[in-house]
Length: 316
Image (cartoon, rainbow, N blue to C red; front, side):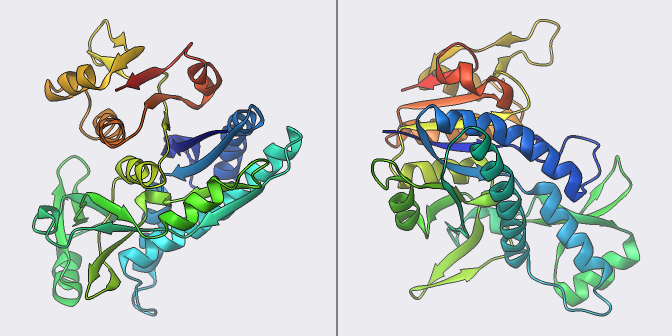
């Protein structure tokens, strides 16, 4: 039985510069899911995770536009909304793709909470921008009514709310997800879980409480992969490989490499802080905690990458 956690990036749902319409997102998902369906047909049972940046941002904008008439929802609820929205869209697109491949499986979305540490230093230094831009007058009002933190965006001329981005340390629903994905021979489900990094919660007094934060989706996917005891972790992005000297005239694609080598490259600053570095960190966490192989590649190259003919393969 071949299984994997597969994390799809935001470009698999919405391309840069595209309007965030339902039609555009479904078209992109149909293309992405055609590749995933072929992977499943080849014998893999997968847990699929996804980003939610533009979608949760739009939910926050909708909250903002309606704030004079309707109470805004907290950020953890907005993440849950985006999980339901994108989970449904992926269910539709992947079911269609599987039927075309002659595969009969039920695509099942699990609303997923990710546990973070209430003492994580990120809560003292919010840095992750979310939602719309505001002017100075609006910022003063929102600080007084919501106690939000803001940072100025010098390039785009305005203020944006910033929230903590704590590290994930657990997945509440991992045991149920594991039962679904390791359901035995002729396993019936394809599982979507931990969308957008999961709904961030902290544990207090034996209960889980939602917090206003955003969790990195690749790190959350790695924690999920470790908790369900996966051996393969695949991250799909908009480039075919991780690269050294990416912004130089001669970028060097990485093929098969080791965790030790990737850590050296990471510590030397070879990977972009907001792009490839979190993926490499996620791969290293996975391999240090029981995983065997991590792959970074594009959606279009997933078939070749699984056969060792494309992409960046990181082993212990």
